[in-house]
Length: 344
Image (cartoon, rainbow, N blue to C red; front, side, top):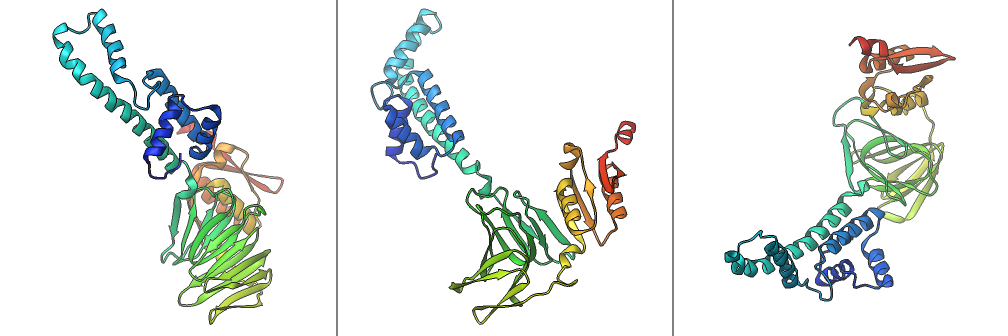
């Protein structure tokens, strides 16, 4: 359900729905307004079943607790489960207790749905990576397959899962972005000075207070909007770069060189899936790692590569995860070292 503050009208509507006082059209309208996802609808239906089982809600907005107690008391008395001497004080206490219980059921039910709504959406949970003075390039593969190379003294924030309409992240510092294409879901980067919108491309972004904003495009194209001048966005294509100068965006030619490929040096992966790591290595170097087993592909590893050869990369991975490697048709096939695992 929506996480708006609960008011009497909402509570009354919920009670009417749980008590079966709504028409079919009203029920559908209630669910459309208050249950956005199937999980939330199921949660409300579960509450309705519990309410129906109690049979405490019929004609009135407040359950007939007296009638409920009379029915329960008669059964207990017939079964000789309560002594007659305690009948009077218990009868005085139980209606009030049942009223409290009925209110608690409604409040707890609403609270559970609201808690689910507040925690069900991973996209609201932001992850923040900070490289501080680490000389390594921290590499992160996002949920959509995009790869971000984060330079030292930089901060990158992203959601665990992206929203349905866009992919929004934030950068303070410098990073190289290799974005997975998705024309229906633009990738948007927020920096202190600019907003960058891409569909699928590779480019470098530098946004530091001391050096100003700079964006260089390796392939594809991006739209850059300066926050201080949002009326004049610039479209930057491969082979171009754009800088901020006097609150304006200035384009110029860009030629990639060894210095611009800084992100390929001292590549650091932290708690990253092996499949993501070998995908990055295969993309940036003349390597061809293959992992046939799904379980092995999903194993996580923390490792740093500093201009390593294919042989040393293979050795590092195999030693860390106790894997074996085979050269088959020009590819390095990584698999579980079952022999050593059995001996251990």
